Length: 403
Image (cartoon, rainbow, N blue to C red; front, top):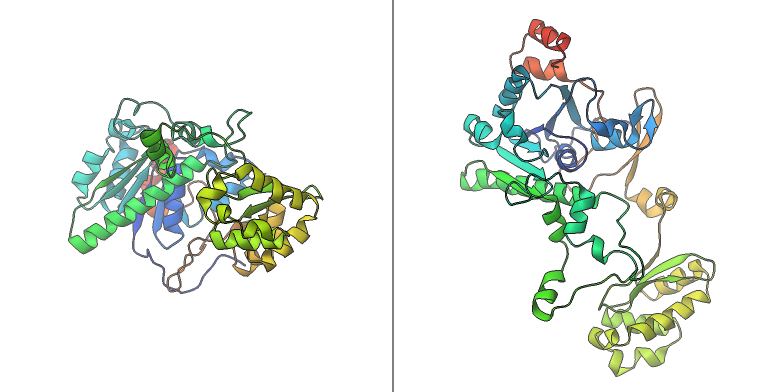
């Protein structure tokens, strides 16, 4: 598959987004909007660009991650510390629907690009502001990264095994959660303008709050009973049975048999009809009192069988289960392929690159990849000329290192 050139309408066609910032949280939010048709103008420092361009595995000096995260964006180089470049940004913001930024609070204000300034130029502007700790509060000026947000938000403490140090997830989950909340906020603000004839507004997203917001019953349980949720390995506390079990061939299987009907099917499938019909185990609260016993029964059965046999047996009984997927497993999986969740494109030198498909799938206005992450400054001249910069002005800015 090459870059998609279909004429299918896109949900966010006509929406203009100005992206300020770097790395993950802010840029990933605008990536999601770009995948559904928004015009995203990404501002990068001249010469170096977004540091993500050189993160992790590279192809001819450019990150493979960059090609994915920055697809469908226009790259414009401007030195945001320079007054002339700042004026260009103000002109771009005056024509934008959404500005997305993830600088430390106060940085844009220092450059004359803060909310008060930009919203005065464009009263219908929506500004998504993503930072470690939010725009207010005693921690607002502290630098914030996803790894720290995941700790403060409560996720890190409950991740791992009780006899070991807390561990992190293998991706920057705090960043991507904040991106998702930022996009939700932006779309709600767009709807408010359209449906209620409202004004623009800014959306304040803190990384730690994005993590905290998905921590389920963590706080209600502590507030009501003083319970501090602890690390439980692969199990789901108080929801039984739901765990990961080692099979005879050394592979692990995840089994979620915690629905009442599912539990009965699971017990019958592994040869324990006595437990399936035990009234004490009919509902989750009873099963939770016997977590260790049930995990032992299921674990013993899994240990006697090969992974594929376990999967086939539980699939036949309609019990949710699955192997632990590696990148290789994902890449070769028939369901991923059928759902077009891995799509092939061509880089500038003709080399193939496979990218994740777009989520969610809209039936009438689907998202798509129109082009890969752009070269640094690829669209600078085009975009600046659209706001009145002459070719001569552009050349002077370029020679001065401002663009």
